[in-house]
Each structure stands twice: as C-alpha cells, then as structure tokens.
Length: 80
Image (cartoon, rainbow, N blue to C red; front, side):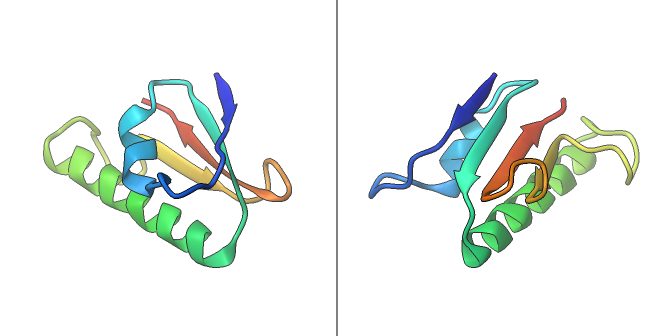
C-alpha cells in the first residue's frame, strides 16, 4: 500500500518504521536532514534484523530508502 505521510507535530521517524507492514511504501516530503535521518533508521533496523537472524546476509534488506523513486519525496519501502 502506498501512503503519503504528512509532517506535523506528531511526526516521528521511528513510529513510521513501527507502523509499516510488508509491501508498504511510505512517501515523506523530501528534506535533506529528514532524508538522512530516515536512511540512518533504516540502516539500524536492517542491522538489528541481521543480528537476530531475521535477515540472512549483508545484502539482504528489510527496509529500503530512495529519493529517486518519487521526485520530491523520500520513499521508505518495507521488503520483508
């Protein structure tokens, strides 16, 4: 499911990742500092999933972040 996220006073990056289900795509309005924070959180979540053996190898991903899929947005994609 593709969903556009609205930035307001209740926005938190970690809550976005907690709400996502497999196959979800969230579009967050692009801002460089926000994009870097989202990339960092995705990296942390992927690393933790490897440590608890949810992911098998270093190239296996649970979350992917892209700024080119939807211009003007940071896309967060949950793969597994």
